[in-house]
Image (cartoon, rainbow, N blue to C red; front, side, top):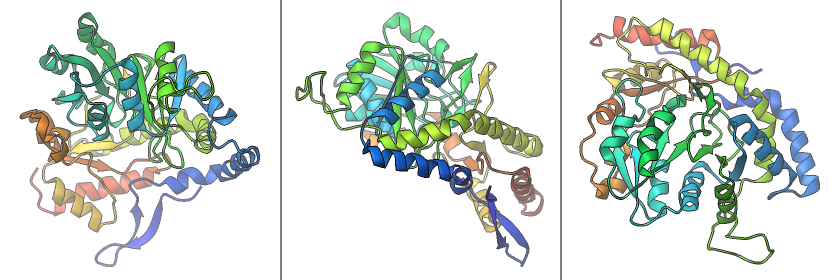
Length: 387
């Protein structure tokens, strides 16, 4: 396995390694021979769209998630949009969405003509709660999209205890939670449907774009298949409604089948890495998201909160530690969504100024983590940063 760092020189001539934010080459290197083999098989069969490789992965992913149906689609954004359309949500409907999510979540709502209703989150977990949802329910509320952020699941059943008596649908955006569980249930298996992205950096990532919908609802699964395949029904040449082109390529499905058997092992390594970060940094003025009782996160991202975030990032970057921010501007403050007038959401807005994502990936070594922690500690002990 290739190392997760490269030799580099820090300011002052200190010869030290660079810690990448995410090292996909190291993750993929042991699988290259199998990738080539699958590609050769698929190319020989010309099974580029649909076919046995897609059918196989859909069965595998449904079984892994603990549901009856999985439908491969082009990407995670399409997955959300197709679920909303499949349920029949559209103009005149409101969909509750946490404001601290990737823009794809509300963008899918707007794409089908519905209105996103942004809500705040719990200050400890940064996840949406039944209380947040209840505060936003109105006469036009048709659905709630719960976002399993950073790899930790929302307490979906508690949210559903608020929504089900009102006939409101719950959809799980599980793009950051492949394999996460809550009281033993997999992400995507509790709501009306779950949606996934297989963007390369996800816990289960393709070698390109891809996504999926999972559900126990056979009628919804069939409608999503129709909508994602130009509205084509069971009779060749007959299109029963206006759909779109959103299909998971056969080659990506084949690659995902190669990677899926490693997912649980890689998630265990992510959990171990996250725990090491917490132990090594517990005495510093760094805030970690709380883990809910019953939750087993998969740590798609190692997100922390610090004061002086920009200075902290520069300090790490100068010492060859790559970081990122998820997300610097909350969705309700994005120019694209200003017209929906969500008002002030204090928890999300305060967190947005303090969030920073530290490196975390399955092939990251303990030495890598210890180096990040050493450099982070020096930010407070040597830089004069306020505690």
